[in-house]
Structure formats: structure tokens, C-alpha cells
Image (cartoon, rainbow, N blue to C red; front, side, top):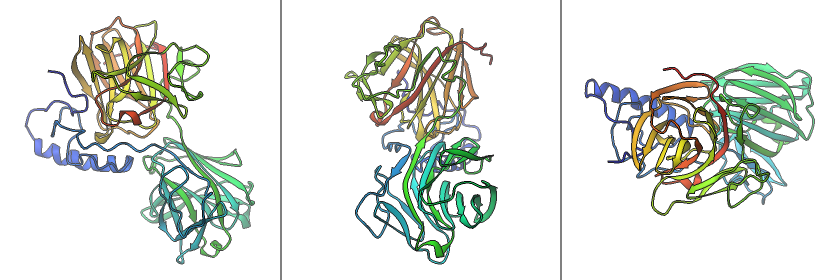
Length: 439
């Protein structure tokens, strides 16, 4: 019988099952809400060798696309409403509006004003233009709510900006940018990659700090500390652009590399011909600088796009924006019926490793609870029969599997998920084996 690639791993022995169930439900709830608020199967289990309902995915929700942008170029309203990129603003504190291409606070309610967009991208470059500068005007990022959030705030009277961290409602000044531009039309931006936070003013880096607080939160937006500034403070051109985490392979060392940053195309073929993609099953395309699946294989078999690595050992790495259940990375492939692959299960905060030999699929293992945030680096190292899976350089699974050890096909796979057409790959790297894989 073929295994369901979206189902949890096989059940363990029943000993202490109820204790495991309680612990896993609590941990899963924190993780999933922190990532995307999916709420998919919160009472199911995700850790390896633990199972609840085998029929997962039947009511699976699509993972929302990461990032967001708003030029505020719309008719004046008494609320921020829907951003130009399609997501709706949430006015957490204060009353906001839009007019003349600017966002503004119409009522500060005597305290902090905060509006957030669900950008769902903890690793991102988030920026806004202070169209009309005023004391307390700010940019918020990695926010859960007003009481748990980061902010960069203008202090014009001192010619600087402050970095503020709020935890449980308690504010702490986490840094100061020194003397930097702080006039009308100044752009303030924050780039977050894992625990590293870099703040830039008009494109020039001004402060870098390391802090893991709220690293999985995906809310970002506008803030105003000083209520008296509501009459003058104005924001323009908000943008949140996801970035990839650092993995084992970089563009500089990759023998095969594709970041899909080219014109939209009905196929994956690189414009310079340097990457010979072969669409084995299903139809793939380039859209908005990412690889996407446009049409599934008619027979229900894995949708697969391959390139020949010319090596049976190596390290293959992908990043996705976003993940969808059943989409991932393939390696050691001969064709769609003979292949190894790792596919995402975002609702369960994990990934499944499987092999398919002569059309028969076998589960090889599942990762423990991991981040499914957009842009995380997914790495597979393989040498001989040893296979290791890492997320953002953290090795989480090692298996011994000799099947298809001589095959050299690597690529993109999308298999047996409800929302595969919403999956998007933003990075694909391969390099020959950097070192031996040990258990």
C-alpha cells in the first residue's frame, strides 16, 4: 500500500500515549499560531513516531503568501482597510485612515497607536517612508500584538531613532541609531534574519543587534508613540519583502543555482540556458520571481521538475515562499516513479522524507517540530546510503537508505496536496558533497 505523503508518521507503541498527546498538542498550538495562525489540526500530533488522525489534509487551509506592500494610493477612508498587495490591515490600537497616498492616525486614544499587516514573514526586509516626520513615528516588526512587538521610533529632537522591544507590555530600549537622517521622506527599514536585526536609514545600515525574541512572529506595520503627533505624522510606501535564511549552500559555492529571479515564463527554462530544467510530470512556470506549479499531472503521480546534478552525492537546498503541503525538494531521481523526496506539512510544522521505487512509496522519516516560515533553508546532504536533513543548518534527521543511490536527478516536487498551485520556490542550490554524512 502506498503511504499518504501528508499523513503523520506511523504510530508508536501505546505506552504513555495520553501524556505524549497532551504535550504535543500544547507545543503544536504555540508553534502553528506563531507561524501563520493556521489552526489546522491543533488536536493532532506532530512529533515523529506519534500519530492521531491519518486523514490529514482533508480540510487543509492554504498557507498565505508571505510579504505585503501598501502604497496607500486609494480613495480616502476612515480605516486603513485592504493594502494594495491584498492583505487587510489590523488596527490594534488607535484609529487610522488613508488619504492622498499616506497613512495617518486620526485618533490616538491617548496612548500608543499600532496598525499591523499579517506579512507572515519573520525573515524579511520591512520598510516605510516617513513622509511627514513627527516625534514617535515608527515602524513595527515581529509583532504578535501591542504588548509583544519590536518598534523603531523617531526622536527628531535628538536627531536619531530608538529601537524598542516590548515583552509582556514592558518596554526596553534595545538600541539607538546615533545621528542619522530624520527628516520628511526618510526611509526606515529593518532586515530580520533569524536572531539578527539590522536597521537602515535611507538604505545605509545604522544598527545591528542580535536577539531571538519573537523571531517567529509575522506581524509588521506602523506605530506612533506620541499621541500629540497624530495631527502631523504621515507614512508612505510600506513594504515587507521576505528573505531566505542562510543554509549550508550559498550562491557562491553552488554548482547548480537558480533563484528564479527572471521574467515570467510558461516554463522553468533559464533565459541564459545555464540550467537545463526538465519538466517530467506536471507543468511548472516562473511567476513573480519564483517557480510555481501551474498544472498537475493528469494521472495523480508526483509533479516533478528535474535537472541532472551529474553526481549521486551532494547537498541540495531549497527555500519556499510559501510552503504548501506536499511540495518540496526531490533528489536521487530517475523519473517520477523512482525518486527520493522531502515534502512539507505546514499544518503539522514538519516535513516528511520518503522514497518512491517502481511507483511504491515508503516513508523514511519525519522531522520534529520545525519552523515552516517562508524562506527557511531546507538542506539535504547525501553520501552513499547516508541521508541527513537540516533546517537552517540544524541537522534534524539522519537515515540510512541505499535505494537509488546511483541516480543523479534533483529538483522540485509537488505531490498529493490540496493547494500545490500556491506553492512557490524562491531558491534552488546544489553542490557536490562537502563532507561525509554521519549518523
